[in-house]
Amino acid sequence: MYFQEAQVKSLVPTMKEHFPGAELVFDAYSPFLRWTHNLRVARTKIGVPLHWALKHSQDLERWSDGIRLLDARFPFQYPEPRLRRALKVRLVPFLATGIGVFHYQL
Figure 1 (tube, rainbow, N blue to C red):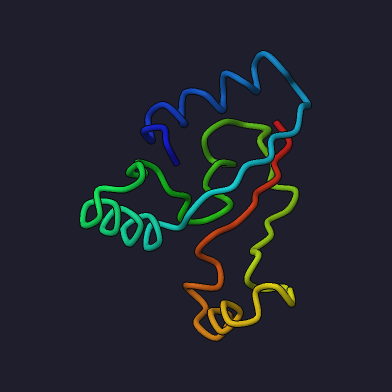
Figure 2: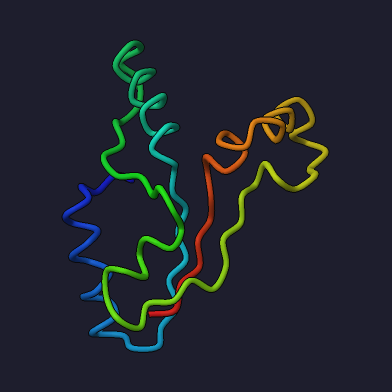
């Protein structure tokens, strides 16, 4: 999110090359949530703008042969009592999957 897309597209295959078979886990925003985050940062001047977002969890698999998606989890899709009010987000699919944790094998 904090890297430019070109940097991420260079970093992931390089990690695969140096650490074959390793697993990579990271969180990412969807393009829509990145856009809304950046609007808030521009308006409030608080925070850091995000430069990259993951539109589809399978996108990384196309960057290099052998990269494989193992799991994708979206926090708003699971019942969590502490997120009681925020869980209404689950009713809007593109918001429910707006923030995810992605697990890949390199």
